[in-house]
Image (cartoon, rainbow, N blue to C red; front, side, top):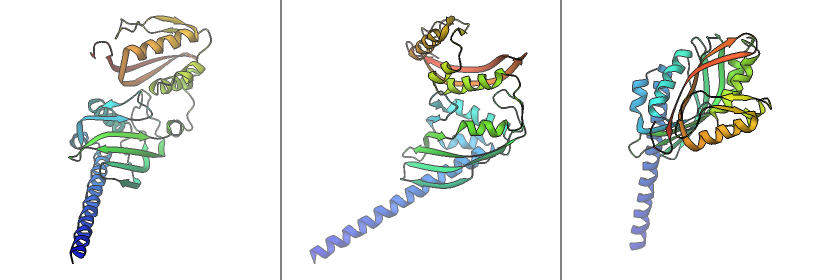
Length: 260
């Protein structure tokens, strides 16, 4: 009799545990679905309610984990550039604390994007995303991945480059955003002159560097002295056939002082 009671209690416990796991998985999935509903509606305030204060996002176009404040700006900018953007989810699964998603990013470029005028082209490419949730079901982190080259090709389809410098400059900034030094060096002439005007930031001297060795030294010093939290080229201004001026925004924290 005691053995039967023991196994009955055990079966009841396992059933309750399985039911609880299923409920947690469902709740986590609902949070992620609500996130995309708010993001696609351009409702940044509603989206923010689903995120924890220490939220960070990672994506191919970002230099590293990006905090909540910057992600809100990026979300608003994307919705302005692609007013009809949607992220239909094809599949998802969850263990209660993490949610993996596969879906599509669909939209039409009707507004300025990365400093470029609207192309009116449509984008339609697959993405994957991994959400991490807190115990109170707030999104703590988001890691989204997609083929950025596919997006850029769709965005610029049928349009000639603004000038010969445009594709090279775009590739350099894409590589910069991923901290991909080998790709940057591959796009530089052996006798490149690398000038970054400004004062010392986090112990990193911004000045004139010569050759690929100088470019390498610049990025080594930059990475040693500064943690970049936001890197966003905003306006590309072609000048003549082979020159390009880029205006943008960068934010970071000096590793030596912790100051932004």
